Length: 302
Image 1 (spheres, rainbow, N blue to C red):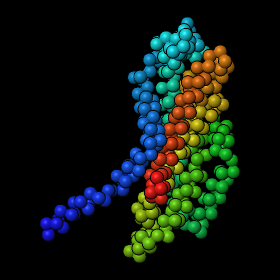
Image 2 (spheres, one colour; image 1 turned 120 degrees about the vertical axis):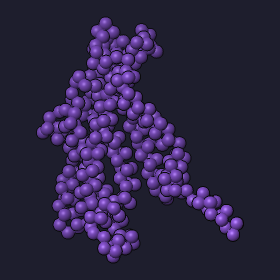
Image 3 (tube, rainbow, N blue to C red; image 1 turned 90 degrees about the horizontal axis):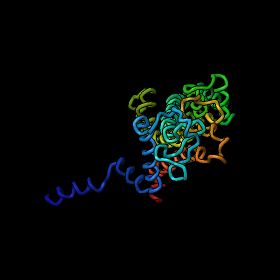
């Protein structure tokens, strides 16, 4: 008896919870873990931009226009990353622009994810009438690339912060609808759904309490990768002058304003370009790590 009672705690300890297994699998991916740290630092810096920025992002220091970064000749620690053509501090604009770019990306993902999940679940559980209507509408949206569709929406609604979020969300919506429908249809063939139906569970309860929780893994991965696409599209719209409008700082808008000075003052283009590159790359690596951690087959292979 004493031997069996001592073996129980050992057996419990030998079986980690799914959350611990997921955390261990994600942590074992060094690239994804490093990307998570980098993105966390970028997000924290953007959140604390009013405290970390050395200057106001729209304040102009005309006497210091196109001043190089502090590590180049003529640079100064007062403007660590240099200034742009109007004498505005680039570091301050990058920090405040991060709040705009990351905020738009997050809002666009949520605005596409929530209705996308609802429409996808409705299409999966009502295959005769609702599903054809929803999926044909999504096929129409998929006929255009996401960026072109966003440009079309911006053309109708006009440029601006809120309209940029709507435009990017409209382009991302079909992906979430199709993914949710496919995941839900796969889950509906499992035994626990049949058992729930036999037990008297209604359609609403099956949708939101039985099937949807088991569809979250691919949705989380897709939302993470969609976040990086939303950040890129935000920068693209800003570069084209269709996104966030001046004087509000935004990474794509900074690139557009600096393109005439790419030879004379390359740091004006390099800084926002590198910021976009590092941010998108870190989010993509995080998404790959999440995909591997959620998938038991990839987890065992690694």
